[in-house]
Image (cartoon, rainbow over all chains, first blue to last red; front, side, top):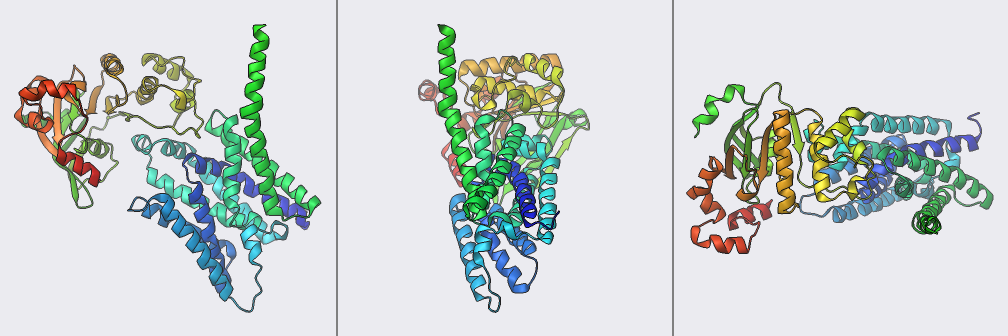
Length: 275
Length: 255
């Protein structure tokens, strides 16, 4: 069954969507959108190192992303505003990564595949790596769910309940780096942040509890992945960007539904009940 | 006054001795000693930047102490009520779900506790849409879930008006009488501490004076810290500022 490239691509896409959506909720709640972007951009440097040393791409990307996340966590609040710091680090690591890749001679590297992903080229080994990474992220979120929620709400409240918010931040960083590392093959470094944030943002108006938001985000993420793959097959467009486009359209539709259609339906039914 | 701490240290719920805390090279707290016995109300007051929040954090183990010790009774159960909490609009959370964080005490306990603090009926409301007074009642209810014997109120009435503050303190006193827990609260002004306070500790990096509220009010150390000189008293009530003395304001800016 895994011999079919379309099945491998589908499994990889759905897997990454399932890990990125609940993690993306935390990224949204903790206002870490740009942080996620910086972590993803840093992965290009990891890809360059991996190619240079002929080590697995996943390992290099994971290591550099994690280093980036830890560095930003450590440096924040030391004289620079968070967004300035992230702006400096995200773009410089992307630039250094791109320059480093250009030094590699002998191998012809399709840089586009790392920037925008190449889901149809997911091999069996990739699939195992992605599966393990996704399982790892979901296990981390499952195991630390309450502690993560509480330290996201308020660090002091978490401390008083016996959790260490710094440790939870480390867990967030680790989960983020793992997601970035496995998502490179699927959507590429430039669009990973979209996989994290758009499904969570889409789910927000439809949810009343953190758990339902994570679940609804998963549904939107998987829908966007499957529909995006189909659309890219039909229209012959790049798969990663097409999945993000579908995700964005879903976001717009839900916004429209929540802000325009739903209130007016409510108003109409209220009017009807008055008459 | 000092002897009070050391005579009774054996059965204190929580006690710190000669506690000092540093942020980098800056000393935030110096030689603080205090103890809380079961059932008593202790108020810590100090101007902004005086280190009173740091003292709380040191007591719950949130900051590293530079020297001294914090000793907790083995059966100490802390209920922590933080100062006003900002819940982001992006975070969907009902009051009921909030009460179940980090562990679910059961539906019956939740509704009983919310009733105790007068926050019943709010279960299905989104936390981000509560008023300041409602939210403080919910926070107090959540703090009570572990049946604490020590309530820590960290400027819990900040953002409430005088009427709201008075109502909140009446509620805390009522609950304290029912549950028999001690209360350690911080506030930035003497006239917004609980009337039932047994002992006031006035800090500005170190303890500058302590005692019963009536005695504190007359203490020269307190008056110089808060500028409550008799001839300026009428003027002070007219323009009533939160700010402490210049040095405290600078200390806060530095932090």
